[in-house]
Image (tube, rainbow, N blue to C red):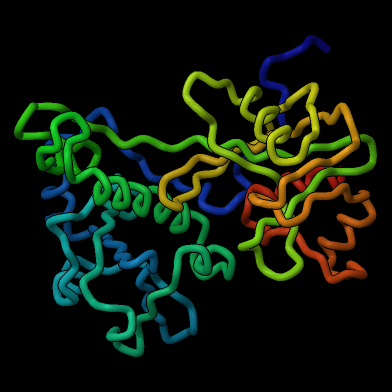
Length: 313
C-alpha cells in the first residue's frame, strides 16, 4: 500500500483532550464592527459569563449544569456586555462570552461560579461548551491585558468583536496571540521520565513542559527544556497532539522525545523530583493502585493523554 501523508487514526489525538471540542464557526473573514451588536440582538444568542477565572453555571432541576444565559438573563445579572467577545456561530445561534458583574459569593443559589480548571476536571459541561470556554476565556484575558498600546502606551479600544485592539494615539493595531508551550514525554525503552513541580497536588507526577522561545522550532524547544530541567539529552522528537489551554492563552504542543542517556540531573528549583518510571509503574498510577500513592494528571490534560498513550501502547 503506498505511503500517504495523511495516514492517521480516524479521530485525531488532539480531540481526546480537554478544551478541544470547540465546534464554533468563527467566521473570521467576516468580522466587522457590527458583528457583536448583531449577535447580541439575535434572539438565539447564548452568553457565557466568567469572572475571576470562574464560569457561571446555572443548576438545572435535573442536577446538571448549563453555562449559557439568554440576553435578558445576562443583562439582568449586570453582565459587562460592553466588554463582551463574539465567539462565532454555533448550530443553535451566536455565542458570546462576557465578564460577569456579580461576585461569586453573591450569586443566587441556582447559579454557581466554578473555576475553569474544575469545570473540565469534573466534567460539568459538554466538550463543545468547554471548547467555547477555552476560546472565550483566552480572548477576555488577552483583551484585559492589552488595554494599553505596547508601542506608545496609549489606551487601546476593542474592535471587531474582541479580535483586535486599536490605539487611538499612534494607530497601531494589536491582535490576539496564543503562547506556544512544548510539553513532552521522554521515553527510553520500557520507561518514561516524569517530574514533580512544587505546586502539584500530593503524589502527582507529570510530563516536563516549557514555553517555546522566539526563533525556536518545536523540536528544539522540546530538546532544550528536557535538557535544562532533567539533564536528559534527546534524539528524535515526534509531535503527537495539541491542546488549547486558557491559563491564560496558551497552546500546549504535545510531543514524545527519545532519550539518549539515563542519568538525571535537576536543580530542585523548577522540579522537586524527577525520575524514570517503568511502564508497570505508570499503569499502576493510572489505575490508582501505585504502591506509593503516586498519580498522573486528570484525563482531560494533554500530559495525561501523552502518558496514557505511551503506557497503553
